[in-house]
Amino acid sequence: MHASELTLLLNIGFIVITAAGFAFLGKLVKMPSIVAYIIAGIVLGPGLGIVQLDHSLELISELGIALLLFLVGLELSLQKIKDLGRAAIILGGLQVSMTAAGAYVISTLMGFSVMECVFLAATVTFSSTVVVIKLLDQKGATSRLFGRIAISLFLVQDIVVIIGLTILSGLGSGGDEPFEMVTLTKSLGIAFAGMVILLLVSLFASRCVLPKPFAWASRSPDTVFIWALCWCFLVVLLAHQFHLSVEIGAFLAGIAIAQLPIHDDLHRRLHPLMTFFVAVFLVTLGIQMDISVLGEVWKYALGLSVFVIIVKPLIVFIILSRLRYSEYTAFQAATASGQVSEFAFILLGLGAGAGLIEGRVVSLGGMVGILTIAISSYLILYSDPLYSAFQKLGVLKFFKAKQEPDTEEQHSYAGHVIVVGMNALGREVVKQLSGRGETVLAIDTDPRKLEGLNCAETLIGSVEYESAVEEIGLSRARLVISALQIEDTNHLLAYRCRSAGVTCAIHAFDISVVEDLLDLDTAYMFMPAFDAVREQLAIFDQIERVDKNEEDIPV
Image (cartoon, rainbow, N blue to C red):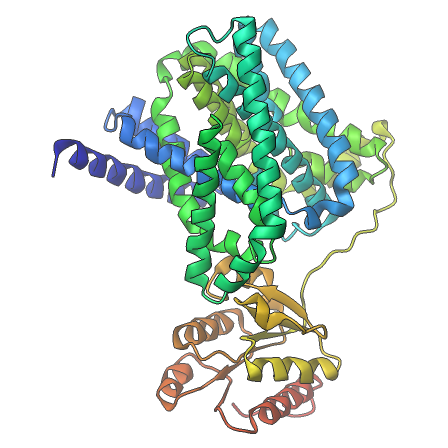
C-alpha cells in the first residue's frame, strides 16, 4: 500500500470516528449534526493538526456535495408544491431579494470588499432545507401548512442557489482574465445556456425516458438504488461537458427523478449514503477554517447571526402576513427560516477555491452557520411556546396579521390498519378490510403491486427504514399485518410493533419462523392456507370487540 493511500485511509478513519463522537455529544444537547460535524473538523484540523486537507479528501468531499444536491433535487416534486406554487414564488422572490440586499448593506458597513459582501449576502440569505425538514419531521409538522410553506420557500431558494453555482461556473471558466467584460459575459452566457439545455434534457427524461426503466427496476430495491446513482452521475458527466459544476448536474438529476412515483422511497434509500459523504464534506470544511482570524471576525459573526435569526424571519413573517396567511402560520414558517443553509458552506468553499474570497470570509461564514443553525434548531423545536410568549407580550399585533386559523389539510395517520406486502394475500386483505369501512394503508416497494388499490391509501417504501416507519404512523396504528415472505423484514417489523405497543399479525410462511416470531411477542401468526384471509378478518373482529371492551382476546 502506497503512503498516500495509507494517509487517505487514516484521514477518513479520523474523520469518521471524530464525526461520530461529536454527533453523539451533539445529540445529548440536541445540537444538529451539521454543527457537530463542522466543530469536529475544527478540532481535527486547526485545533489539533491531525488531518490535513489533500486532493483525495477534496474529491470525497465533492462527492458528498453532489449527493446532497441530488437528494435536495429529489425533494422538488412539482406535485407536492403545486398548491403553494404561487405563494412560494412570491415569498421566495421577495425574501431572497430583501434579505440579500439587507445583508449586502450590513457587510459593506462592516468594511468588506464588494466580492466579499456578495458572498456574505449569499451566505445569510438561504436557509437549511436539510436541517429544517429534519426538525419539522421530528415535530410531525412536515404536512402542516406552515411546514409545507417553509419547504416550498427553501426549494425556491435552492433554485436560486443553482443559479449562483452557474454563475460561479461561468466565472471559473473565464480563463486567465475572468473579470474582463467580454470574456466574463461569454463565460456566463455559455454556463446559463448549458444549464437550460441540461434542465430541458432532465425534464424530458423524467417524462419520456425514465418512467418505464425505473418502473421495471423498482421490482428490486437494490437495482433501483444503483440505477438512481447511475442516472445521477450520468447527468453529472453531461454537466461537465457543458463546463458546469458537479453540483448543478446532481441537482438537475434529482429533479428528474423527483417527478417519478418512486422518488420518496429512493430518498429514504439514498439518505444513509448521503449522510456519510456529507459528514466528510462538513468535517473537511471545518478543517479548512482558519481559527486564527476568529478573534478578528467574531464581532462580525455576531452581527450577521442576529440578522439571520431575527431580521430574516421578520421579513418572512411580514410577507406571509401580507399574503393573508394567519398569524400562527406566518410565525411558524418564519421561525423555520432563521438559520444559514448548508449550501452557504458550498458557495464559500467554491468561492475560496476560485480565489474570489479569502480564508477569513470562509471562517466568518462558518461561525455564522454554527451559531444560527444551533440556535434556530431550538427555536424550531420550541416554536409553540415561543409563539405563546410573543402573543402574551402583544408584539405580533403590531403587524396586523390575520387571526383566524388557516384551513389546512393535515394528514396524520391514526387508528388505521397497515398492510405490508402487496402479494395476492396482502391485496385481498386490503380489499376486505377497506370494504368493512376501515382506514387501510398499503405499503410495498414495488409500485406496480400498489396499482388498482383505489380502496386504500398506498405508499411506496420499505418498513426496514425508520423514516418509512415514521411516515406510515406505525406507533399510532390499530393493527399491522405483514403478508411478506421475507423472514428478516418480518422479524424487524414484529420487533418494531412490540416496541411501539402495536398489535401485529405476521405471515408465518414456514414452520421454522414460528419460534422466532413467538420470541418477538407476535400477537398473531397465519400460515399460507386457503383460508388465510378469512382468519385475518376473524382476528380483526376480535380486536374490534376488545376495543369495545366486549371480551378479552387470548394471545
